[in-house]
Length: 89
Image (cartoon, rainbow, N blue to C red; front, top):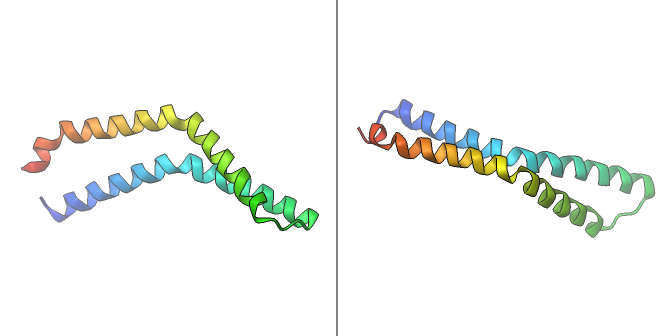
């Protein structure tokens, strides 16, 4: 294995991880920003008000994005296993 191969392999894995995490991170950021604006407008500073809506929204985003995530993970893993003999050389 060459250093270029290892770097490319690690880069591809990191890109896949970030792509899979992006829907939940984006939803969490939007909900967090919305709750922060609500808290600033109402002067209500309750910690559970920030955490509970984020957890619910991220869980719903995970349920909605789960088929897409599984498709990406399965195609990545299948490609990895099919090319395993080429990686060993």
